[in-house]
Image (tube, rainbow, N blue to C red; front, side, top):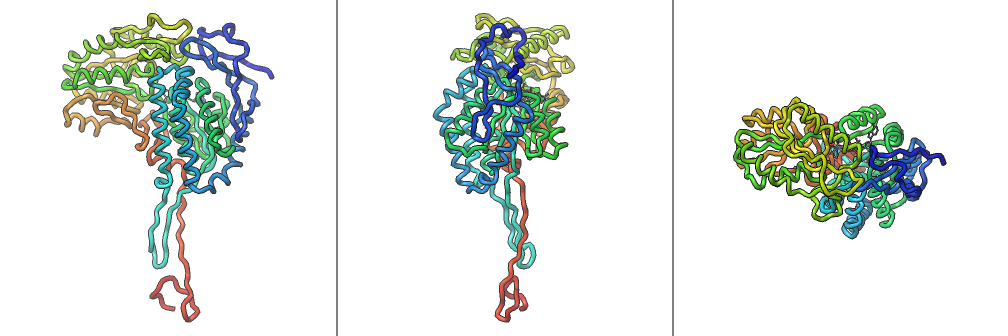
Length: 518
Ligand code: NAD
């Protein structure tokens, strides 16, 4: 097999440093672990030290078609099972997650860099999603109306869509695949997962759990790869629905191409989330929430608060404390229990974040806290410490682009109206928070803000699994959001049956209801 090797990190882990026999991952297709047919390979590195953990195949069209065929073959038997039977597999997967939470967390930390406490929290949220999917025998129910006309009833039932696929990002290796997989399969669909090429090992672990619980072959398939695999999913006639999570431009591209091919699509894009602090905000609580929102998971959350907007005197009460407290955050490998933030995902990300910080300084922002060279971090890792740019203007690049790193930009405004205008002019609208004890300000903010998820005195207002999760504007393309009731809507098709039955009367004539002339 010819291999074409590339590396995800720029200059930190070079080909010369790679162990020559890093394991090559296999795809999971039709219940078997199989080698990809496409020849390309890509290294998976530990972002904390640059160590090559494995190599993934850059699967292509044939590999995707093999997975789609396996999923199509499994569909008739799977969808004809009783819903209670399908639900048992979700219960069993939840048990696996509970039993192996430490293994899952360790895998997330190893390949994604997240600190272990955050990784465990991610698994806990994924368990919550599994629990909501277990309610499907209730949530999937249709509706019936007796007597739409004399003797005629109508009912809407929900049926599976067919083969569904998900294409997921690097920053939540367990949670984001679980936003889709359990709902898709419990609704009677079969599934193909293409995880991020940067964090494939955790999906491999999840598939090994599905194997262990005896999920029938072909119900869930895993294909590793990057752009070629994604394009093959988008073009495959066998795939009926595509769920995507990633950056804005990729989301737009996925939405367009999948829709052109007649598929149902939900595409969640990138974000720029604003935290508005009013002068009456409770200082201690606000500062700790702002810090964990901006710097948790090294700022690599789609719900990370990356812009702080202080209103009026909030600037005076907040900024000093923020500067004091941020210095206490420890940057280290995610395995250090003391660490508040671990590395960013790759050397490329590290370079991009440095460049953003430099652009902020060039454009006139004050570098209040400089995290570009954190001390005492492991060699070879992609570390950036918490960074605060003060006095940012909305037109600066740092205020316009998603940095996706531990960088907080601070904008000062005079009024709530001005704050709302700053937030609403952003083309994205994933999450936002307001910090205040003033109910009228909260009401005004919630009513006027053009953002999908709003927190009140909460730094990361991610919807719980039983509510829909999604942004607005460029943060989301589609109409049905993630989890909550929307999941059942997305993963089922409605069919309406209108029926009438005839009974035979004493005279031998047929009638539809007692009282009819016959
Ligand atoms: P990404 O867009 O680079 O990659 C996401 C997926 O798309 C990966 O599986 C990748 O293989 C594939 N992909 C990337 N570029 C492609 C292309 N040109 N053609 C075809 N496929 C392509 O995103 P990422 O860097 O893995 O994740 C970070 C981004 O995801 C951030 O922008 C973040 O805000 C966003 N995100 C959004 C949400 C949300 O809920 N809105 C949640 C998590 C992450």
